[in-house]
Image (cartoon, rainbow, N blue to C red; front, side, top):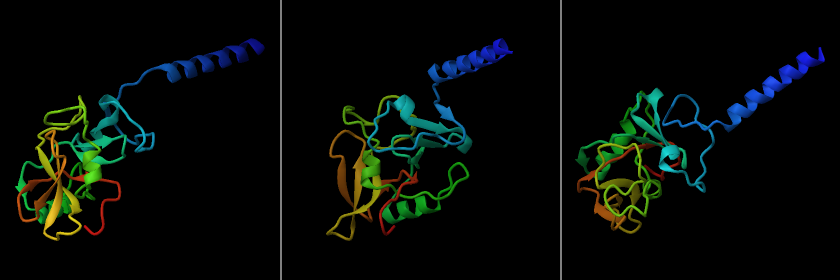
Length: 180
């Protein structure tokens, strides 16, 4: 009886050790994606970005921030108000609830050590990127001006006339800005 119990405990301990020490690479995941995001962590691109297969591969979870991004942002340009409307009515991976990201959220994607377009971490999964994207932020003193973020290596945050054309990259999650 004791031998059977010891053998069972030994087998359980072996299984726990094997699973606890096995490295698991997960470029594409299904279901819940723990651990909870924390803006104070720094992950490599291979573990930071997860293409969401249960969203048809059309969205990417940023495990550093907890935000979900379009894998391939819209190639269409338009004025700021159209960008807001586009995100607010967007369906990606059969999910609504998208919005225009803040300056801080867009700049959280930038790797300052990458000097040329796109200034994202090496190995990122995003496709069809453009050099500059509208943010949800507006200029505090000029009502006709919105902020934009460059992924071109210079002048990261700039101002643009809300009636001018810009590209839009929608995000899901986080808190955004008020009002939108």
